[in-house]
Image (cartoon, rainbow, N blue to C red; front, side, top):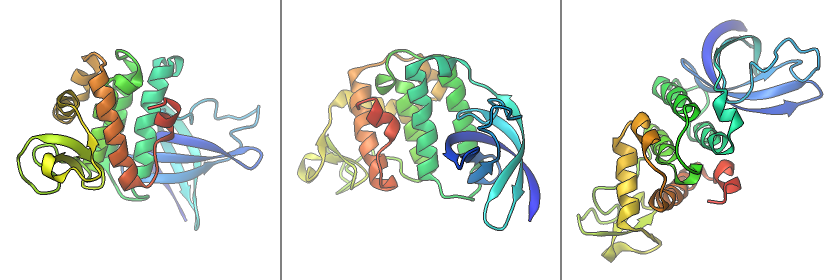
Length: 243
C-alpha cells in the first residue's frame, strides 16, 4: 500500500454507493487507471468540480490492495468552453471514451496522455460545424487508433496489398480494399479517403481550422466501424450523435 502523485485526464465518472464516485483516469505515467473518490457527491463535499470529466488534475492516489483512491486533487486544466457547447461535448466524449476502451489498464502511455490533453485543448478553442462532420474529431479518433496500433491501411489494399483503386472500407481487414477484394467492405468515396489521409497527416490544430463536410462524416462513420471491430463496442458518444 502506498501513496503516489500523478497528472491525469478524467475520462469518465459514475456513481458508486450513496456518496462516492468511480473515476476512469488517463494518467501521464501510469496510463489508464480506475480510482474511487470518496464523499464527492455530498453537498458539503470538499472536491467541488475538480474531478469532472475532461478536467486535467494533479492527483495523489492511495494504492490499496484492490483499488486506488483519490486523496487529493488540484486542477491543472479546466476546459470551460467545451462544457457550454453540445458539439464540443460530443467531440470531447469521443476522444475520452475511445481512450478508455482502446488502452489496457496500468500501461504507461505518455504520448496518449499528451494527445488527449492536446485534443481537449483544441476542442475547447472551438471548431467548425457539427462534431460528426468536423475534421478535428476525425483526426482525434484516428490518432488514438494509431497509438493503439490500429491505424487503418490507406496506401494500398488492406486485403491483397495491391495498389489498385480503393472502392470500399473494411473494418475486419483494417482499411481500404480494392475492387477485387470488396467482400464485406462498405463503399467509400474518394472524398472520404482524402479526409482520412488528411486526418492522419495533419496536426490537430490544422484540422480544427478546417471546415466540416459530408466527406468527413462518411470517413468518421467508416473509422467508427474499425474502432468497434477492435474495441468490441461502439462509441456511445457517436451513437447519441446519430452517426
